[in-house]
Length: 105
Image (cartoon, rainbow, N blue to C red; front, side):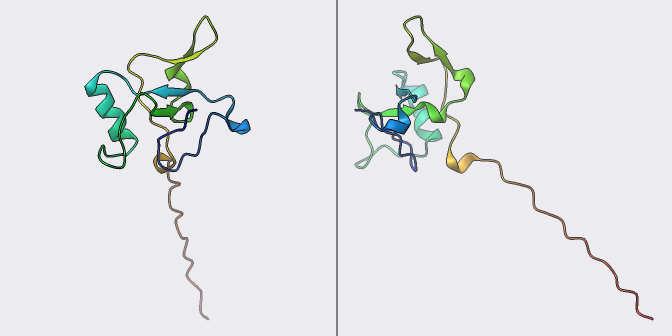
């Protein structure tokens, strides 16, 4: 069973709506692993530990980071880092107010 460890993500491998989502392990390289932890805004400590079962779902990777293997599995390209999160969406620019001056006769 795989859950996504990213805050505010409720992806779960057994949910019917999440059947087309792939779940990916943290990289073995300590430097790349630390980069993933920083990107997902988690702190390693008593409440979060990276184990063999800690996963990040494919919703947090761009399409160019994921490749389809010959056996039909979704795999991450080397050096891929999760970048798509609810907190990283672009903000719309603020609207500008147009003020009109009234003519007083």
